Length: 259
Ligand SMILES: NC(=O)C1=CN([C@@H]2O[C@H](COP(=O)(O)OP(=O)(O)OC[C@H]3O[C@@H](n4cnc5c(N)ncnc54)[C@H](O)[C@@H]3O)[C@@H](O)[C@H]2O)C=CC1
Ligand SMILES: NCCC[C@@H](N)C(=O)NCCCC[C@H](N)C(=O)O
Image (tube, rainbow, N blue to C red; front, side, top):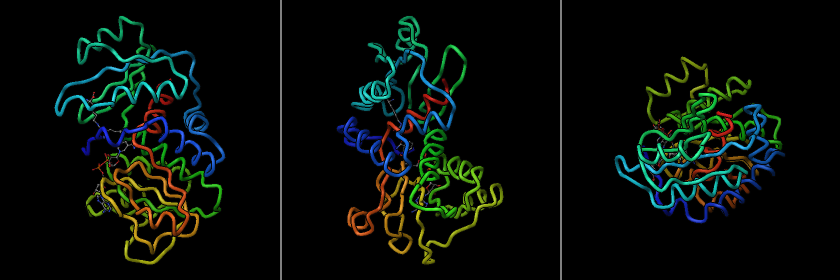
């Protein structure tokens, strides 16, 4: 898995505020509104315990602090434990946490200790970015391009199919593309073909995965992928409505899904 870097998380509050205003412009709802609609849930004073985890590549500088800022941005009462790992988990529970947030190099989870619900960041992220793409107010087309059909992209493609969109899918991994075509009935897309889209959902760990030939004026590109799927030059040239943020939107999706 591509791991976050401290630089990805720089000015996380500013990144989240900017992403929220673009989500509002694109969908008419803010991120909270998207989560409420998606899961039918609302916060009810849940207390969130954030537990740093030293496993694998270890602590990512600012990861826990970013989660603290993100949970507070969405109105939750949250704290970061002093201890890490098992001791930190124990500290969180003893301090009255209702929901645990913690991540190693493979799994980032939200676990609601009160109702038993548990969420994984990858599908939760795919679903919310796909939902944002599906609410593009500037088009009535039901066509959507999905680039990247992995642990984030595939759940997002499932969500778009369930919402009745005509999903064109592309992945450099032909096995994953075949899996998505056979299991979801999506349309395999040739990245070289010059079909322009008003709505694109991208979830890859590569830069510049969306060629200019696929962009239309004012199109929406909803992408959790790091680094960005298009250049700044193309974003400006086509006035692309870019919904992209490194941690907060996916975390909000996890939290609302376990309320
Ligand atoms: N912003 C956020 O909140 C989050 C961001 N991410 C990021 O999302 C991205 C995807 O994560 P995962 O789905 O877990 O990774 P993954 O490795 O499971 O899936 C990525 C997929 O992209 C495909 N791919 C790679 N290069 C491609 C290209 N040029 N064109 C088309 N497909 C290509 C791969 O074959 C793979 O199937 C990563 O950059 C990850 O860091 C992940 C979770 C949350
Ligand atoms: N963008 C959300 C998905 C994050 C994921 N790509 C990642 O970097 N996971 C590793 C997190 C490791 C955190 C670390 N164990 C800590 O607790 O500081």
